[in-house]
Length: 196
Image 1 (cartoon, helix red, strand yellow):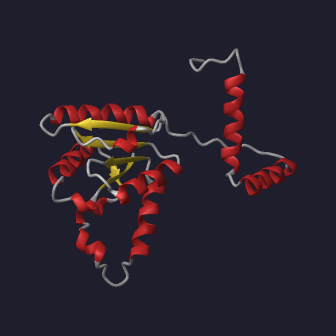
Image 2 (cartoon, rainbow, N blue to C red):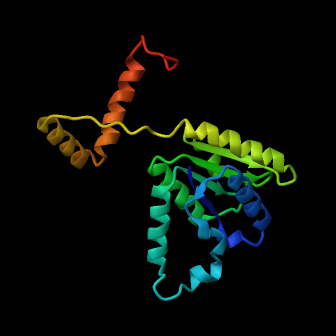
Image 3 (cartoon, rainbow, N blue to C red):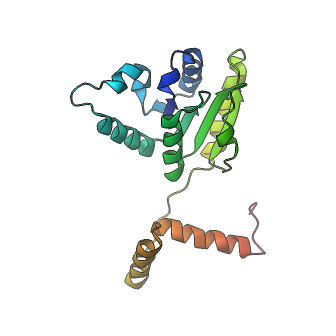
């Protein structure tokens, strides 16, 4: 399992214990951390990048890491963490499951309004490491069930042309269009139940 772990670098000093605690629990699950250099980043490095390591390159690395990951774990206790919020949005747009953790008493109110089977917002307490371990473990199991399964099939050139037209005119990927059609049929089908 490839995990992309993010947290607000601006709050690294304040939440250092939390960030490291979450990282230790994640390491128990033996993931391949996509952004192993997270703890090597600093606000100073981002503000004053060295030659060859521009902000644009950093953004591209982040994008590539999110695409490569199976799961995103974000520490969201720090308010106004614009970078983390943007990365969560990107991950959800790429259909990646996201576990957003916040220390008790620091609930991110905006994220409380988001509902999806690919998103879990969970409080934790560092005084109860076993609870943090349990929260992460159960959340990962739940989110892994929400990962999309790749499904390939052949279509005629006529259907392919139509799907290309839909994609261009409606500005949605062909797979999204097909998924929506299937989901509509699932809702209409009286004989189908999710337990099948």
